[in-house]
Amino acid sequence: METQTFGLFGQWLNLFFWFWGLVIIAVIYFIATYNSIINLKNTVKETFSSIDTVLQNRYNLIPNLVEVVKQYMQHESWVISKVTELRASLMSNWNKNSLERFAQENELQAGLKSIFAVAENYPDLKASTNFLELQTSWSEIEDRLQAARRAYNASIKELNNKKEMFPSNIVASMMTIEDYKMFEADSSARIEKLDAKSMFS
Amino acid sequence: MNWLREYAIKKWLDDGNEISKLESFFDDFEIKSILEQVDKNRIRRYVWLFWGIISLYFLFWSLFFWEVVTINWITREANFFDTVITSSVFLIPIGLIYSAIVIFIFRKKIEWTIKEKILTKLSKKVYDNLQYDFWRKYAFWEIRELRSSNFLNSYERVDKIEDSIAFTLNKDWKYASVQWYELQTSEVRWSWKNRRRVITNHCYLLKTRLPSARINIKNDIYIKDDRSDTVWNKMLTPIIVSSFIAMISWIITKIFAIVVVSFVLCFVIVYILYHKFNWRNRVVLENLEFEKLFDVHSNDQVESRMIITTAFMDRLVKLANKTKRKYNFLFRDNVFYVKWNISSWYLEVNTWKKISSNIETFVNWYIEMKEIISFLQDMQILYLSKTDSKFIWADLNPPQYETMKDSDFGSINLGLWNLWLWNIWIGNFPWKFTLK
Image 1: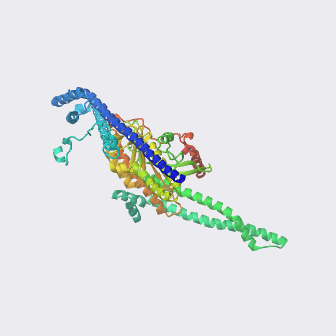
Image 2: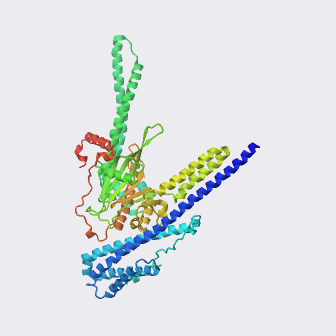
Image 3: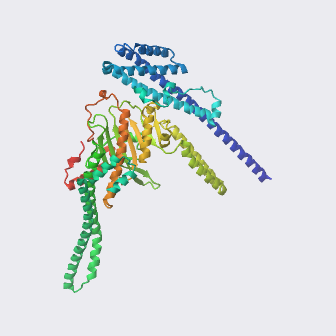
């Protein structure tokens, strides 16, 4: 009888330890996943702010560039004024993470590319030291911007994976996570086949 | 040399011009005469060994024989066969010493002939500005820094620079300089009896300095060869195997099963924590092929992506797939390092095999260097300034000799001491290889 009681008690004890063991493991997992999701959210914000930093450098470049080129490029003053207007508009919408802002940034990038492309027709401008420095700075800024966008997209992808994949989606559903949009190429940049002949004609 | 063409094609060299270059190089009269001289030296070695030992034997035998004859004349006791046996006993140690000396001398002579005369010329075929000198070592002293960045983490000590080459990517040394080292390294371990056990490894280390890099790299970027797909894949195998063992052991004894499961859990926890607290964050990139082959670690996600563009990733994957080597890269302060492990016999002259096996070794080296240089030239295009008039450093000197600090190399002096003795023996002045 005593042996049977002890045996039953032992089984209940066994079950008790297994149950609480599983609960502890589940709690540890919940805490770890919660922290990792918070970490990813902060990483997304950090990478977005690094994009903002690079964009700020680009905005700072524009007045110097306009000052240098406007003396030479009198026939293309409409490009310069468009770039100046876009810059002013974007500076006023600084903190917005919106599709409208991304579209304006793409327009600004296209405008700057046009200025540098058109400057090829002005040998005096091309030879100017200031212009060359600005061109180099712009090139560095564009490289950095591209890298920052890639980092931003990568961090969003990781966060989305955590949100959608099992079993971390259980923890993610209990949290409030903003829906972040990845940077995508402009529709004009998505050309399936490039026609080199028309480009150089 | 028909076998050379087939061998080169087998070793991934698909450029017909390069194969023709190699063929014409080894068909050259001067090179052929050097190879013939090497073959003659090989045969001379055997002749010296054979006749030397025979002569030594007869010398000993005759000494013992005459001694016995004179004794016989006095004591009327003589045993012809005793002289044979006694002289043989004395011949063994002396014969071994003599053989070792002959083998050493001829080995060094053959090695010097091939490396000094052939490899120096072959290096010019690889690239005009390749400087290889058998007697000179282009040294570096960033070992502590490299070790602290875990780039040389499995090696506690760099013993010796076995070979080194210096070259520049442009003829006037203004843009980038490259130094290439074959290192002999060793790892000190403590066995269960607390005795030191030293394992010798070999690796190649390529160091490229980019003085006019367009991008200033402030943080370390470490690209490590890692063929496991994901962290889970790395852990899955031990988990599955351990679970299987645990299942079997549960049948045998529950305690053993608990021990195994606890061990696996500890391993998994330690592994996760190690990766969590690794000081360099993992950079996950878009190219899946690249991710399968390499792991990138850096403190700055943006800067690492400025270097590791899609073109760069494609280029690395192409290099790794073509050469089948496991490369590790480190970017630091506009210098980047490439490291890959090799066996100890790589680029070593084998004086016992036919000369064609040595040519194969050098052809391997030629092809590999061509690939690496092509990769470096692509890197130059990617990372040097396109408007380079601003970034020319007129006072950049070629890295011919750099002062080596004894404390950084540990036993490097032993290697240099051997080299110094050899130079004395063949008549070179010691100052010829003293580094300034």
